[in-house]
Image 1 (cartoon, rainbow, N blue to C red):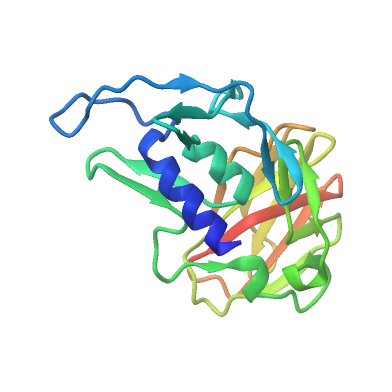
Image 2 (image 1 turned 180 degrees about the vertical axis):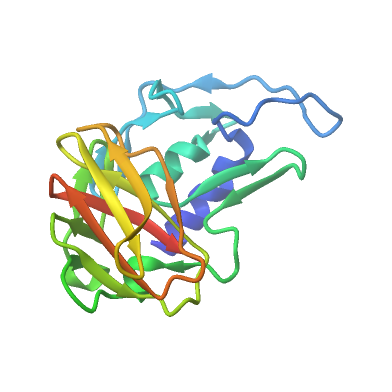
Length: 217
């Protein structure tokens, strides 16, 4: 898995096809490439389609015998965060912060919640995205002990129906409320501020909202 991601990221960076803007400078060279609509992408046994930030389908590029894939689409398939800092001319793949952790794998609920880590062996598909660890939010709160050690949690949400996810800090203080449109492709990343929060609780109304790609810093 890591070997696959390393290779795919390396060939993807050159043609990073997401809304970062294109700026002609001395470091850029014009090339002639071909959009390859006849090439299928299979990720972990599942055929995948790729989309840009506007949910428009995009395709692999073939250049000098090498296949290039759009980096944002790779991020959506693998769950890796992708972002671009135009001022620094830097493309970030994965977590920017050294201290960032996978929330679902490292912090388990001490009460309530349906919490699926990788070792439980369950996968879920949301549109074109498949995840192997997630939290199944319902109308009962799931409680997590943060100990006031973290600043924020970034995550994605999915529900078959319109729903709202609620985040509470240290009791009933509402610190985050996020609306999810039913069956929307899970391309949006949400962030909740948990600075100083000792006890975090999360719930959904109506129930059965999936939370995944969750990173705590």
